[in-house]
Length: 279
Image (cartoon, rainbow, N blue to C red; front, top):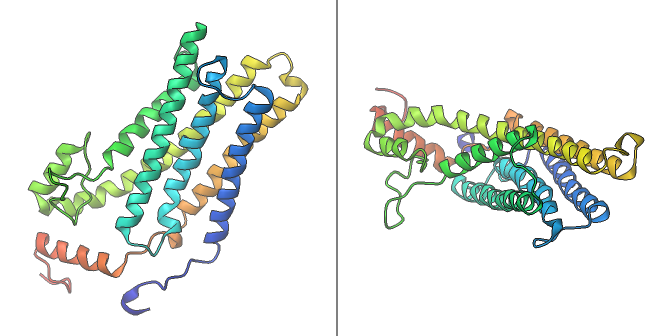
C-alpha cells in the first residue's frame, strides 16, 4: 500500500479470536444469569434478592464491557482514531455506571441484613479495583475549555485528576509530544492490569459467595457449585483470549495517513524539525 498504510483488511486470526472472546463473554453472562436465577432466586432491587444484582453487574460491567472496551482499537483498526476513542470511552463509561450500581446493591443489601462491610479479601481487592478504574476512566476524558473546543487538537489532554498535567501540555507544547509518548504505555499497562484485577476480584467473590451459601455441600460437587466453578473458568478463558489479542503487535491499530501527517506537523512545530527529519 502507498505511504506504508495497511490495506483495509484484518490480519489473519484476529477476527476469529475476537469472535471467540464475544462467544465466551456472552456465555459467561448467560452462566451468571443461570446461576442467580436457578439457585439464588433471581434479581430484584427492593427485596432480599438485591444482593444478586452485585455479581451480575460486576461481571457485565467490570469484565465483559471493560474487555470489549480494550478490544475496540483492535476490532476497528482502520477507523479514525477519534471515532475509536469515542467508542472506547463510551464502553468504559457504561461499564463504570453498571459497576457502580453493583456496588450500591451490595452495600444496601449488607445494611438491610446487618452484614458488616469491607472485611474480606474480595471486598478489599474489588473496591481497590473499582476506585482505580474510576480514576483511569475519568483521567482519559478529553479536556476542553468552555465552549467545547479543545485548545490542542494534536494532544490527548486528560482531565481530573490529571487536569494540571493537561494544562502543562497546553502551556508548554514542546514537552507534550514526549510526555504523551511516555503516558500512553502507562495507560495501556494500567488498563490491562485493571482488567486482570477485575477478573481476580470476581473469582474471589464467586468463591466467597459459595462458601457463604453452600459451605456444607460445596465439597460434594453439587450442581450449583459446578455451575459457579464453570463461571469462574469462563472468566479466566475470556481474560486469556482478550489478553492474547491485546498483546499481538501485528494486531494493533495502525497509524492512519492523516494521523501520521498530524503527528509529523506537530513534532515539526514543537521541536523545529523538518518533515524529512532534518534540523
